Image (tube, rainbow, N blue to C red; front, side, top):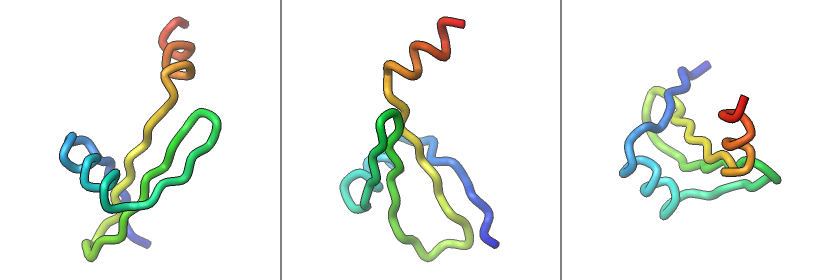
Length: 57
């Protein structure tokens, strides 16, 4: 099984947004792009409504 690393840099997200595919749910979007590296890269975009409710507590 491959190791999963998080996308952290802005240019990494832009690359996935322009060249990859995405799946959208009600509160979250998942962006996917194929690579030839030893690890999977994961980036998550969370709805601002959900993010606000988490940080209010």
